[in-house]
Image 1: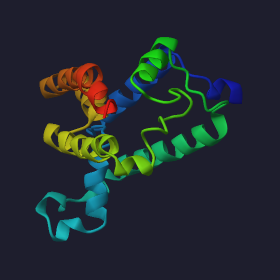
Image 2: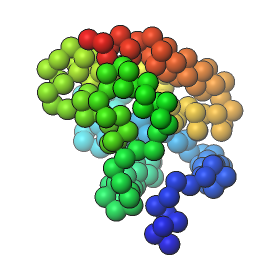
Image 3: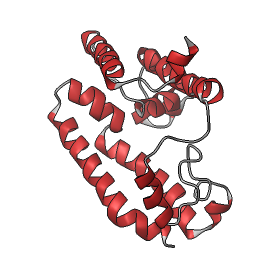
Image 4: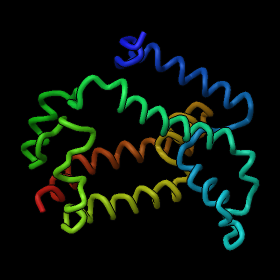
Length: 188
């Protein structure tokens, strides 16, 4: 049983499970999205007293807080008990491409340690990738009214044209970042 759970699940198993969950959420009038939980958490801790944006009944979103808690616990369980090795299964071409860009030991961990470490925060490359990148993700999520999971999974399931536009923007931005911006940042 643990062997079955710990292996990557094929698309024809994970896809129908996601579709089943999405139909359930739509049926009950809820929409899925992880980034909405930042607003929920701010409201839980009383931010609504000083900012109107956070002044809402967060208890109606309790299911979403339970969902994100399950994601965190699932990630911890998967990384601590279900991963057979720390080596990430990425293609040799990707490893070669990342190595050519100066990334040390790509695929030997969840994130390249040569980029994501405390010492990197004191470099221009680290500030751009970790601090500026984190800010842009937060700003973009707020500006777009949701994150990639919210628009790509929930919004498209709900046939929202704005989500289709957002997903096209996510992919275009990802390609722009991968091919033109990331090599320049890694060269710093």
